[in-house]
Length: 277
Image (cartoon, rainbow, N blue to C red):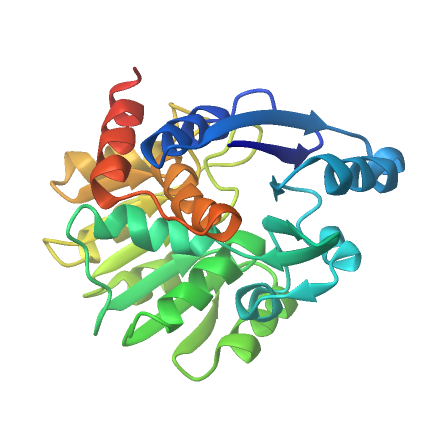
């Protein structure tokens, strides 16, 4: 059976998703036809309607993760809690929205042996991806999360949605060091280090993490980003977001087909991506 799937985006030309979904489709015996649909905002209505008519489901990236909720007939708890949707199921002519971004991070790190139960996490960022990560941290028994961000209203939105385990802080060098002190996991869920944005001015806070800490940078488009290399140089376990993007496809495939790719298939795909094959 063929599943026609797609990515709704504005200007994406270098995505691991077509490869990931084709790979996962083969692993569960499904023929996947995956199309990237780059559209300007003025063509969003017609594009969503076409995808609704022609596809079994599709993924959504910025800047449409919030806007797409207006087109959904129903929302999963993950989308409701995060306030955005990145995975859409087309069923009986209706659109059902889910959020699988943070699930992908938890899964990708889980394949590396990382368990979040009882852990202290420091996270930079409070936007859409950070919300999804925060939701998935909350349902994976994390002990506490310190959220560092420049914009107080954005930070308050996240902490209010996620509850008392999440504490907001203004992003500055002093707070970075304080929140990193003894933390088990550090997550960059902000634009810091992305192409066209500022990078971390100082990475001294990495020295405050636990010696066996995990550092995860959601960004992977900029090989010159300082955080992943600096963490690895200190002997910390360092990972970037290409594996997160791939692993969220496990949950998406389960939503669309009813069958989830195996952990073995996920590990094989992650290894291929990390090698750059």
